[in-house]
Image 1 (cartoon, rainbow, N blue to C red):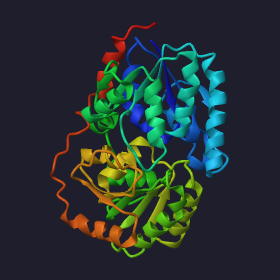
Image 2: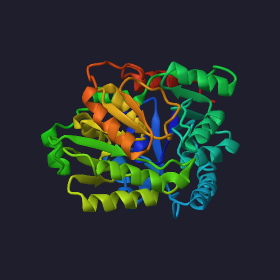
Image 3: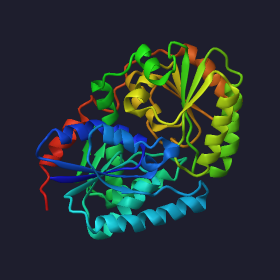
Image 4: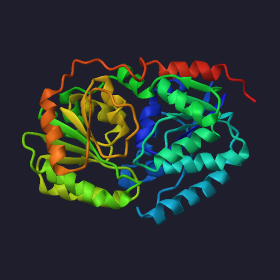
Length: 368
């Protein structure tokens, strides 16, 4: 089976990793990657190099980065991505395309494939994120996909309601749990050697992406967050930089200015999969609005302060403190960390066998 995997960011690639390894180790599959989005941007860490270093075949590179972060730029990039991928799909000979998530560039690549009758397998469908345009984009990808690998029974039901039937919908759990189950994460000393960051200092891992539905509020939001952090003592703040979203450049500049002015703050473009998960493991808690605060953080589990509405609609487990993006409420949520019981086991997203399940399912799907 010839499979083309679409990857547009460090986030989806990290999730894909156990599946890519599982499929590549089996001669039944011929795997190649189409790399686009922030992977090809120096400003976002040129994470294409991570893919090449990991030994995967990159068949095509497509430059889809928006020129700016205004709604016009995102809209223009979506149109350009559809146009560029029409040239990709007319030449593509794969039996199946695998797409993950809900990014606008992932949506555009899948919409371009639809008129060609391409078979798409969608990972992470059925989820809800009311504070981002990703919500509509994710559901749109599900509507043009033929196979659906979801992470919980609740999300399987949502895809079934969306599609009107349950054919081709499989709850396999989350590939991120596979990563955490099988990867050898870095020790504190190894992490310091590789990234020159000392996680023996109590640390907060922070990822704040712009809210793309109410995007005009993002300047206020990032100001509230940084003002709250300015009143917190005893922690090292480690920022991973936001995606290429509406008003993302403004958020990035505010963070970089804050880091310049505060010796206890660090900004990192991309840790890579092992680096990011290792940082999560050794951090005191997470703050922000990233999906990894829901899935990966549940594995340890880590206390998570989930800010705002970007992820609203996801399953709230006991480790997650939902918080408005208001300085005083953020400070209260940070204070509440001292009462968190990290001994509670959370098993919502499977048992770390997602890649093996997906491989077995794909082997039993007839190639048309």
